[in-house]
Length: 141
Image 1 (cartoon, rainbow, N blue to C red):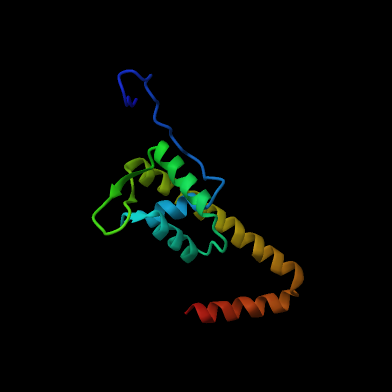
Image 2: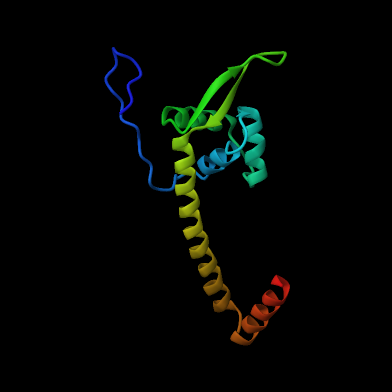
């Protein structure tokens, strides 16, 4: 149990055990895994993950929610010239949730791989499918 103020009722830590509806969450947490970043840099990292159109406002709302959920924390960086920037870092709860996301994504990847394998088998004759499987094995070496 976490208490932030004597005048406020105690808050329970949230325990997350499932994948987020938004894949941005694990991407943000992974981006913060080894380095603290400010919001603009996190948006750049999202493009590296393949997010093609990013609503900056949505990213900042997501960061605020992650902070409320104790998965990340932030502090103001005033060390550089210009306006202060929030620098975000992952917390232990965020690390735990990132592991949960990784496990779930691994299961999803297996399902997606199986789906496309079955999908391709529907459209390729079995002789072509076997030929493509042989080519894939040769290129994997």
